[in-house]
Length: 116
Image 1 (cartoon, one colour):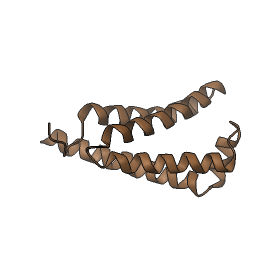
Image 2: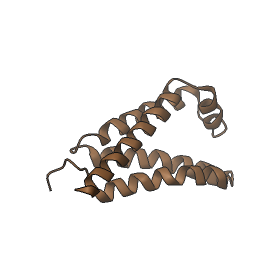
Image 3: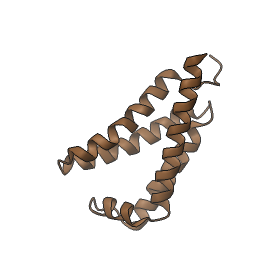
């Protein structure tokens, strides 16, 4: 029971962060455009990435789409990590790694409302 509560809190954190970052990308915040711009993303590309991030965060909330949402969010985080590694930016990688691990832990613990 306590594990389900902890996982529920972790899910809410992941969803909040996904919505926050996704909205920053989708609305074209200058810092997002700058970061993705150095990797060759256009404003439209950043906005699409933001919409995918928002969608993945919302998918995490529902047991039937839980794994797909986590997979999409982890994939976007892994993409950002790879771009940071191409620049040899270990600080950027270190910032993103906890979010990737959060998605992996949530998948391992499974959705707290799912029928097992």
